[in-house]
Length: 129
Length: 108
Image (cartoon, rainbow over all chains, first blue to last red):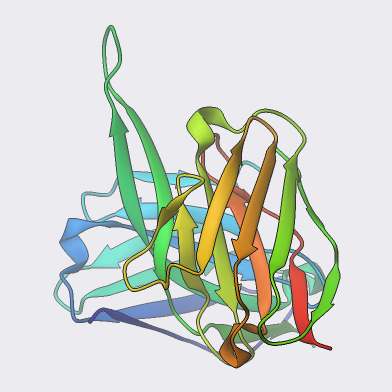
């Protein structure tokens, strides 16, 4: 049974870099894409981005300039870095496993769609001096 | 990006009753790629439904999903005590993936 556990500093200073790790147990990290999602208190969930062990990634356009995700296959971990944080980045952060749906195209590359089938419990990050 | 609006914000029902939750999209959700999740405090969100109507592994058949285009529904046919939680929808038919604001299903 796959389990995901987010970890990292609960408090980050403004303008610094938020760094979180998602440790995956019960499954190989190389077989899937992995997403990060966040939820500020009282607001809806926001997808941050996803990454594969191959390095393929896709980030939310509004966060793309500040986000880097990476995969450590030796530790079965996925990492998130968010640079130049501000109070608006205060949130619960989740990692999730993506299931991929492949839809053949009439011409060219197929289309790929991803839904999140297993989530971690999340970790709270507060941005404050 | 697609905005998902769920209704109602809060639904008060008793065990044994039927719950109907709605998720409306600001534009057509491609190929019906809409999922529903259950979330309880301190727990990981749990996938219930994907692709509008496919139940995830281990999900009881009292949970069902339907809809198309911009309007989607999650139905819990007969509420059990453990079903009281927050439910949210998510579309993955276009990028960026987006989520609804959630519906809290509470005990009446």
